[in-house]
Image (cartoon, rainbow, N blue to C red):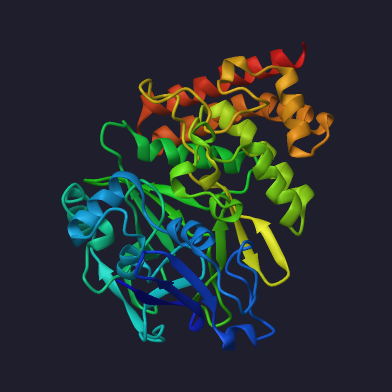
Length: 415
């Protein structure tokens, strides 16, 4: 059955997404959008043009806006639609995507009004406790909230210690990420790793742990900013799977997804400041190696899109998976051809330099700088973090991992 969805950039119609009777996607920019000299493309793979984009291009871009894995299964089950029906999921959830886009049923204009509904902590705790039965994304019938990824999360507006649910045209400022069953202290784990990254000079959004009956991780959205009137406005982004043309099912290199060569190549080809963004990415690779984040795949990298500016976003989803022994010890993307940290030696970092288009000396210097500074930073951060939020066993494991991996890194650099 065919259908049409309107794709808005903020309050303006950018184009229309169509699904034909065979389930194939087609996207075409609106003539009014094309006629505006200030208009921008929604993706580097979908440049401004009057001709439509076919199924292969559209499915990748729009499919990557949606939840995946267990969260997707739970949501589609609640909605009573097929798990593979991207179009119906976009229709149901596309009102508040990552970036600047809203995807709405045909003829439903982007609202210019709305409000923030106060969200008491007791109600938020109730929503979290009901996650196994009722996805947070479907917590309220008048909300249409879509955030990609496998973990359940909910966009909220947070100010002065109070939470609100955005309705109508109102935007969320933060994302709530509750605990994941069977992963002890995962909320504290991610919050600590993000804090440590910021302490080491890596760009990462402000985040914290909100304690209580159901503690959760709260992170400020980097794709929203304050306008001149004090209200929030959208910033557009696309993740590296969208930009490189991979479906969300291929986010791991071992499954046919992109590796670091392709990711650095994207930055080199399209960033307006490629040298700076490549160095941030390089430090991201080294940092993930030190904390033991083996789930650092291409969907955990994104680019912000503004007129005349295409830049790497602040870093997100920084988490030590190594502290959970049952999770895979293999990297999501190989480092110098190697999938495991114990196999990475100096020649592999030098190979990464070649793949990244960065001088070998710059790579070795970055490895040495982080290897020397990370242990003390982790130890100091852990002490304050545990005092504030607990989770001593998990946070201590991460700090020890950073110390052990930093020592190993400095040793292999001598070879």
